[in-house]
Length: 404
Image 1 (cartoon, rainbow, N blue to C red):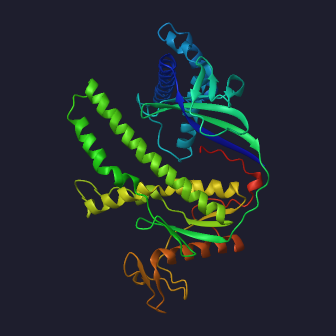
Image 2: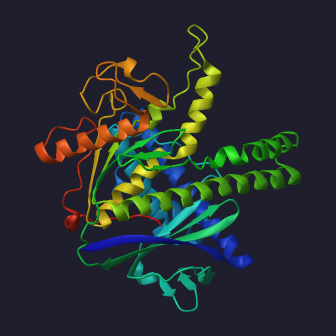
Image 3: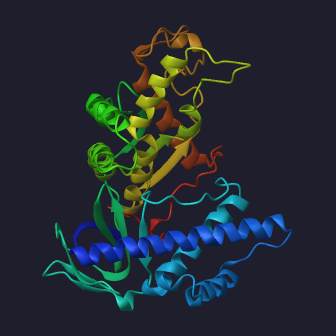
């Protein structure tokens, strides 16, 4: 079984290396934006979409142009990857999977990628990596990197540079362990399992909300673009990074524990984007309970439901298990004893009381039981899942790529 896995480490570059990395990221951003502007002009003129091969010819002209000679200072492969990213963004747009591509802003997700494994040298013992036109850069070697190096992505986040090393290796066919389980996610309880256990929420944003607001107000009182404003912005970015790191650590630990101990996992196919949509409305038709809905949206996004589901899916496949996403309709309104469906069954947020048979239980636990029942019915009978997500029934034939 072949496994693609990425390992992310913090880089410790010299001043000259950090300057070059900012330059390379800026070159990739320039190429991306210039290609997007060219696509828009071509579209307005009635021309056909320019694919990657055609756009690569424009890249050669831009690198040889006397107005942009600094593009030659950056590796050509990184600029080509920027064009491939734009081409992928347009494919997603044409397939109605994403919005129209947007221009990239300076300082927002600056990164560049080295796709050629022959140009990358990884010194695992000494904790350093050699990249084209940068030389050897030390990184915080927190764990060994198994497998053959395939590519490397350098990114900037909250003032720190990171490298994500993609590797490929052969692993033995895993054997699943443990029973089947259904999972119901929520706000009061992050994840409730069908066996009665539950995971308490972390709410990392709530823990840092007051401190974040304090420094955001400080930044707002400073002149935009000044040195003090940049210092205040860096502090705000560090708080955001700390919130995200705590959430990521929590999600990885929870998903690891669940995927290790269960051979089959069923979850709800929640549309988080729709659930966290603003209720403000418009001037003509203003929304109701806007403040309450805003607080609920903040709590939903603070949980990281979609990332939790993504991690559960690939980790279950890695361990040879089965993963299925089922429709969430009426999972917490259906009685697991008699099957009666009614909104009156859920008296409160936490209490489920069937109006037909009188069965009482925690509403999230009832939802998890119904999610498991739907997942088992799908695996046994092949009933359609409305979400369109496929069940990972053949993990041996699946190639996984994930950043850990």
